[in-house]
Length: 314
Image (cartoon, rainbow, N blue to C red; front, side, top):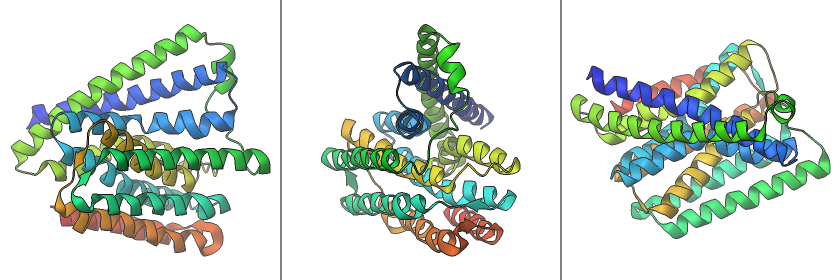
């Protein structure tokens, strides 16, 4: 049991560090190519932060463990809104922008609804993955164009972007990118192997391990980032970041994974887990609309909901 848990922890650590190096390298290369901060933030950074989930889902699908692939995404989406957002707003209430309510939340609901619809035949097919991926590209193009025209917001919170472009050479960016990819690959391998062995030893299903241990692990970067920002009272961290992560998890992670290899889905995912994911997402709307801020009471509700969901699994 200790050996399997150790492998899971090492795998998670490799994924977190690999994802960080991948983002740093990709942002540096994109900046050298003179892409705007807005484009970098909405494409390169967003995709990079979803890389751990993508690698884990691809690896588990190829290893014959689709339960972990689906559990990873559904569990991460529930954790992002229930656990991460719940803890964050308990530390410091979080403001909500109009763009999040008007565009990001509806897109998350569309992605969740399509996933629920596609899952009904207990299989996520290649053409369904293509639809999810294509819709995300269209949404990104729309958001980038709208943001450029309106100048409502700029992505200025990419750490040390000026230093990355001026002081770091392209070869070093490529090295960061390479280290990140290697870390993600081996991290996914170790995490999946450890999770499967842990499930067998503990007498739990791969689905439960995927939706709890694996999903929590791939949500750790969002949790740490959001909690630290809330503690420092940095209001530029937004609900939109977490909602965006949920959109990417479904449309990029499941989209690409099912395009590479169709994913089998267990019946209890449709009858239970996806309903919790959609339910928490729906409950988020009145919390955001009320005074355009998510307060501590909402944080308690979200956190209690997440804990209740986890307890029901066991």
